[in-house]
Length: 491
Image (cartoon, rainbow, N blue to C red):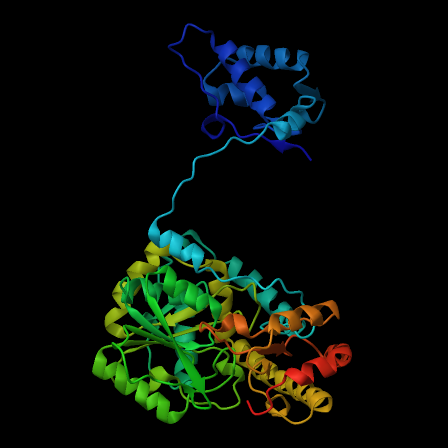
């Protein structure tokens, strides 16, 4: 299909009316160069001579004269019903490809930019096969309800709504999120405190931008979500990884108090450990006494086995920011999340949100607001919670049959199970061996920040039905002995 070239101010044609060179020669030279350089690609349909003449302020005869010359040179072709199209010069693409690249002088990033690139999380290069973690069941997503709502709200997408879209997010969605958190997480937030983000990564970035200065200490769990360390370091913070035990993050008694504490109390990622009641109170007491901020990542709380209140709900000093995402509940490509900030910080965070990218996709916000207000979101979460528990039980039973009793054979929480390995085991190599056998898992060690990170494998079950889980378990059998020798049974 022919592509129509832009005209007027949208096409780079430089005509100098003060030059002694006739305008038709200037236009001829400009179009010829655009075609020969590839800026106007082969197959591009040019505007009509009448339109191009009007856009460039030339007579139509001038443009006709130029088109005639370019047709004679074999650079344009005209066909009835198809207009005038560009013909690629023979060998032009090969000539450009054969030209050796010029050595460009090294150009330095800013120190902050270099830190961000250095700290960037590494991709794992996975395929959606059992037991790939962190993917919901895409087949169970209520796509018909979603597309019906999409059609409904599209008809309400007026110019006024587009103009009035605030940096904090679409007002009905902010109300829906506040209502959901107040009911499901025991919070007492207003819609004004809710900022709609493009995911938890952006919520973390906003918190770091506004609350920490370069060199400020930031406490975080170890192991932890790799992207969190990247954001903190990229914003100049000094991450201090804190080990976990059966009660969650172990709070240190030494060192300067942190400026920010990043914690996932409902269900730690990736180990799945919830923060105990005693540690929750100690954390809130520390923040109140030291003036530290807490950033609560409410990861996977919808599928946690225990339904504790949000940390922000138990914080009388209002030192806790609360963030979450919808991508793990709905679709991985659905990049909407939220950040709930204390009332006095709301104006500053809203202004900063406008500086970063104004607001997230408005049409997605409108559909999600309807999805939540009509009770479809709560129904979907209930269905997924029951479905994932059934699948988790299937996987734990299969792992128990393969490897005997251990933490992997206990009722799971969330959407994945961890197979812990002995210290020093190369879990990356084991993950590669399993990938060759058709099983996708994720090594645990990349989530650690210390010199001796925990080793193990993450096995996700949420995105796979029982037949797929059974098929994945059968593919584990050839490596059963190798895995069993590496398992830490007392973890």
